[in-house]
Image 1: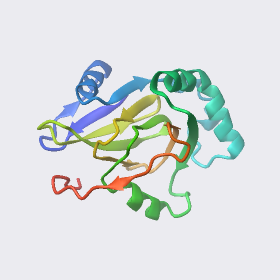
Image 2: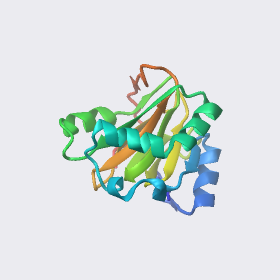
Image 3: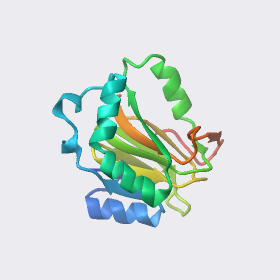
Length: 180
């Protein structure tokens, strides 16, 4: 289950209802899929073949199609990242830059853990959304944010897109952002 940390105050928000209420107040879509649907052989696997990625898509096809129909997504894929990923450090440097997109950024975590750092439109400032298997999050378009790995540096996620070319990142130099 996702947890939130408000960076300015170090306040933590836990529990599905409290997390969902906070994210709703920030216009961030949050849902939870059944992580136990994923075949056990794929639950802790972070190097995936194309067939295994297709199996993940097939496992969550109903949830993906439902979300796509509600939110206008046209395409989706699976991303797997770990210390075994070629050029992982370069990828993380790219990911760990505050940016925006002209469409929302969505991830459904199926294995591992990750974190979205998102800027509130209110006085809350930046907050971290720590995600684990089953968590689904959509950061609104034109919202300062970035996504990165947590300490375990392993994640598998389904990503959904409106545009066929995926998200285009527009980097933001935000003086309010301070790395944790």
